[in-house]
Image (tube, rainbow, N blue to C red; front, side, top):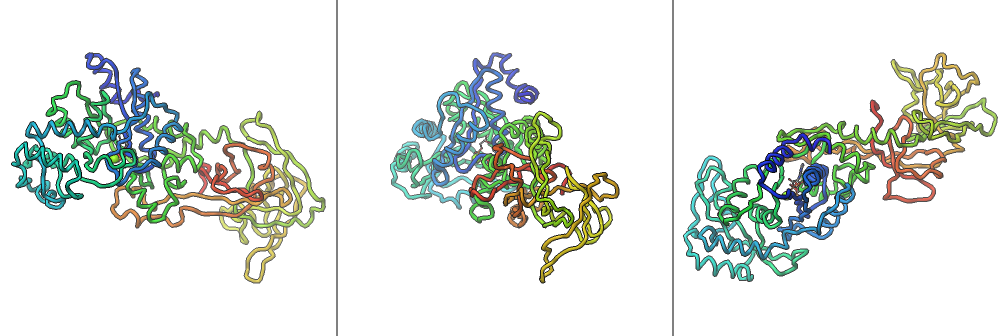
Length: 539
Ligand code: ATP
Ligand code: MG
């Protein structure tokens, strides 16, 4: 809530209330059920619900379902689930624009009767040609002069399914010479013979966004209709409909900037292309910033809300750094995650002078939080270390194990690498080492993590990287060209046996990042993990 207080919309509403413009504040969150919600929607949800809460008002969830060819129940369910997951409640029930289809139809008849709408027989391409562009003014359709009576008859026939898809449309009669192209007789209704997931086959005509949205806002008594900046030019149309339908207590539209995040596409249209092309596995792929994707990856709703709160609400478009988002989940996980040890890319070490079977030790569950206690860990003759922690020859600045040199095994002994045993293809089978009882860290290259072979369980690690190679793919028409083909790396390694007795939401694997279980896989002998986020400062 903290930032809501400072944003410009809060200030507008405060002034409106001072002037007694409204008795109660109503906002709405109006997603189209044509895809899953993303983090941009979370920003809008937070804004709308929190503004309403702040002023003792109400925020409606409205499914903006005016396009039967793209919308379905599966998306409605996912939207409801995600909003609840974020922690918001719907006041009354959920609203649907499709509930208002009859009222909207009545409003359009009123426009026709007032000489402000007509049936056009130009097809889609002709309409767009007649509209002109920024440099060329529009041209009136030859059907613009049709009589009111004829328009009413045609519209009724249109509604009753007399015409095929695209044959005719209902357009507002505004001004084909307007400098704002949106005002050049926009389409109000088009024919679509698709089954609507809610109204089934009742309707074959569907209202366009600009017409339906302002009137749905009016029907729901919305006072402040908050949308993203790209609707700025549509505002004049929003007001035109309300004014020309002689509506009192008009809702008012205000725009704020869209959320964009580096190395991601956010728009549902682009996300659905990625799904169709099988570049990602679905709307909940952990590499995308849909709420379900982030949830699968291991993000908490709390971290997303804190992030949205801290970016604030302005009218300046900006591209938010991915590291900014990551900081919120890292901060949260750092506090609550139990530490464990995992080796993501194992190399076997044999310690030639260790002759016991095993040696038990106790290691801390959280270095900064002693209350989290200690756990049993085991040292033995055969251990695994990460292949990033071994190089045959020492190079400048390298902190791992090299032949002839020493490293400290974290929480345990110092070892020195003596020789490498390779197979005939040159792959390392194991590295022969010697251990020192004296644990003084003189002459050691660095400190590395390790797992005893006796105390490990096989594990598979899903490591996620940016889906795009460029920071702003949202701006590129051919965004697919910039896909990072290595956005998912799957490693086979080991996790310490203690995992069997711990059932936490997240873990920090020392030196490797924060992980959670990957719920798509289940196997009693292997653990599957998602890396939620890396530790700071690791490559
Ligand atoms: P998309 O381009 O992802 O399809 P949209 O605007 O078409 O977005 P809707 O489902 O119509 O998606 O959006 C519902 C609400 O969420 C709208 O009020 C919209 O302005 C807001 N919204 C959508 N994307 C963002 C974003 N990136 N940042 C902030 N608000 C957003
Ligand atoms: Mg939309």
